[in-house]
Image (cartoon, rainbow, N blue to C red; front, side):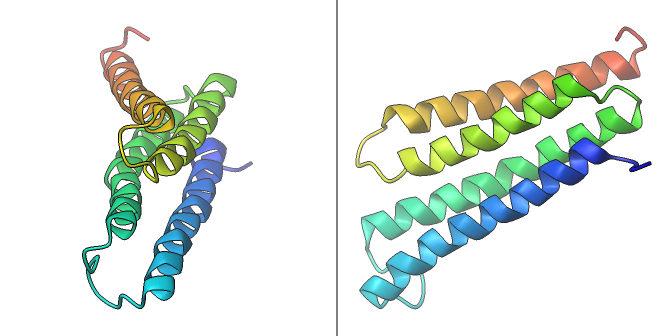
Length: 131
């Protein structure tokens, strides 16, 4: 029996997604010969922020996922939430390529916020013995 199957799968997906985000940054760096910082390149700046935004939020979501699973409240619903979260992070990254605030970015960050808040509330309810 695997101890935290949803967290394990989500962490693997997060690693692959972070690799994809890193290669997007590296591709712009290589194409524009920028070794450090963003070199004033707006596209590189946006892609760097997309990756860092992912790195800023995903650990909290993974920790909440693991805690919920350890409390014995994992299952299909948690798997679905984590799958939607990962898709939202792809949407956010794609949306960050636009000059303004495109719809995929808004959808991605809205789902990210809702996921993090929803998991946090659920974790508190589990801890309080309500859920």
